[in-house]
Each structure stands twice: as structure tokens, then as C-alpha cells.
Length: 189
Image (cartoon, rainbow, N blue to C red):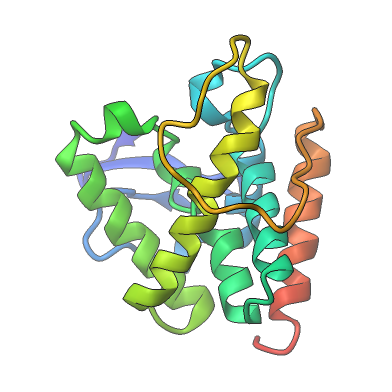
């Protein structure tokens, strides 16, 4: 991050100088390649796991679950993108995030803009609830990645798919994310 007089900027993987706090965000500088790259290198749970498990793989698992539930292509794409803002803002665990109202506002603003860019509109309340349910349900198997056995801290519905919890190199996850994005947007873009 640098300060160029216009606020703090970051240089993305693709070389854009992006201001993550800008309102509204400059969506011309938000690229799916940067999202896939960033999420593939970002570890879930502040890295407090037995091995590296990325936010990118979590998003891929959420998309697979949406498909298993028979959700539309739009909702499957929304699941793939549901943590996309974290590629620019980083992943902050919920117990901390809940105490950072400014971060939550930044995250919501950027995430909404990403949905508009790639889905054509923000999520409806019903769509958000469906994706949130999958996100929470994914916590149960993901907790097995922790060194200690832990019970889920939220009630969640049962999964209809088996998530990929294997340890993968970031390049594999990045390419899988991009391939899935291309598959889901082939007829949209």
C-alpha cells in the first residue's frame, strides 16, 4: 500500500493501482484474475489450521454446494464471488470483523460493486440468505482442518455436496477458480 495523494492505493497482481477505500470503488480496476490470485493465496481462519486452506478453495466449495442444491447459474456465480472483496481487503475472522464497523462498511460496498460488475446487480435479500446459508454450512467440515476438534459456532443446514478439503497449491486453486468463473459466465459476457 502506498499513499499517492488520492488515498492509500495498492498495486494488484495485474498491475492496477487500486484504492480499496474509494467510494464508489473504481470497478474498471477490479479484475477476476486479481480476485482469483488473491483468494488463492489467502488462508481461511487467520491461518489457524493444520494446513493451508485458501479462501479461493472455500469459494469453489460453496459454488459446488450451490450446484448440488440446484441453484441457478447466477447464484452459483454469486457463491464463487461471495468473498471476492477479500482479495482487496484481506480476510478478517468474524470475531474480529464484528468489532470493525468501518471495515464492514468497506467490505459491503466493495462486495456489492463486485456483484453488480459480474452479476449485473447486487444480491436480493433472498439470494443473500441462500448464499449465507451455504457459507455457514461450509464451516462444519472446515472446522475439521483445525488442530483441535471444535463444534460449529453457528447452526447450519446440511451440505448436499462433499467439499474438497485437500491441501492444494495456490496455482491449482487460482486456475480452478478462473476456469469455474469462465464456465459460469460463458453465456453472460
